[in-house]
Length: 103
Image (tube, rainbow, N blue to C red; front, top):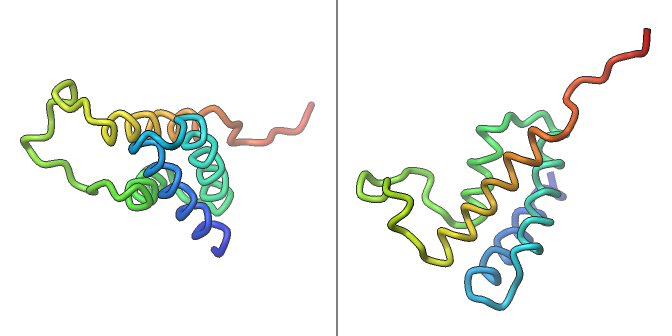
């Protein structure tokens, strides 16, 4: 649990640096991947991982009706968060989920 809290804090800091231009997208991606692996190893399902990531990044959990046109929002915060979400999904689903024994 302590590791998860540290990773959430690291993600928030990396996200803030990336959105203000003092950090890099790769730093955010690296921390997001590490957080996903930690949460996944604890049995957290992907939909809850997205909630944890949103909270860590300080992004609202609910989208307002006026915010549904994704192409209209080109702010650094939106662009970096979109990168984080893609990273989380890619990391979660690219890793093997089931171990099988050879026949």
